[in-house]
Length: 229
View 1 (tube, rainbow, N blue to C red):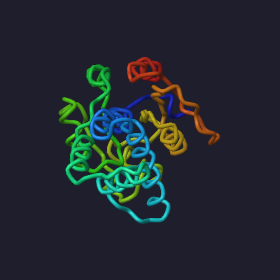
View 2 (view 1 turned 135 degrees about the vertical axis):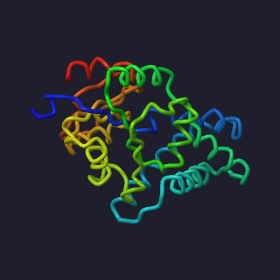
View 3 (view 1 turned 45 degrees about the horizontal axis):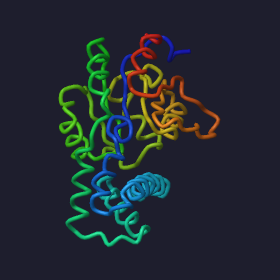
View 4 (view 1 turned 180 degrees about the vertical axis):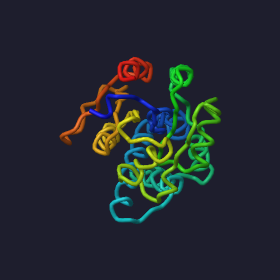
């Protein structure tokens, strides 16, 4: 199989993979005691749902605006009166999400091994720049790829095509890493070697395709990559 011959680069999903989208739950709990975890969960589900619906219907709206829409929906669903200052605080928190603790060391190890690294994300360029800076990851990535450039969201092929275009090699020579099962399935269909960071021990979606590798944290990725170089 062509993808087994070499690994030229690694493309990472951002939200949920590098950056903890549920880190907003702590602030949400401060603002809405007893409802913070649910608000964070509903917010994330609506965010992903809206990206899929808009991609399917060709109605692009950038991920920052879409994230705000999803927050408004989540608050309304829970019957919360979301004041403008509370909304701003939560959105600012989302712009500077915490990275998972093992990530920076793993990324530096992979880069030290001579691999090219990229982020390939639904996030806007400004969102990604903010998150990367807040996580101390500036200078780690060779490419930061936002779907803004193609005006649709993963799992559209146009979004995944940004990886091969940036790395200058076939998708089969790139490992795509995501914590989202639907994302690793989409990447596998597209032709990437895919690795699922399954922190929560989730069950894989029944889509007739599986990632080539799986781990419980990003720390499991270097071993997978080493076997395929």
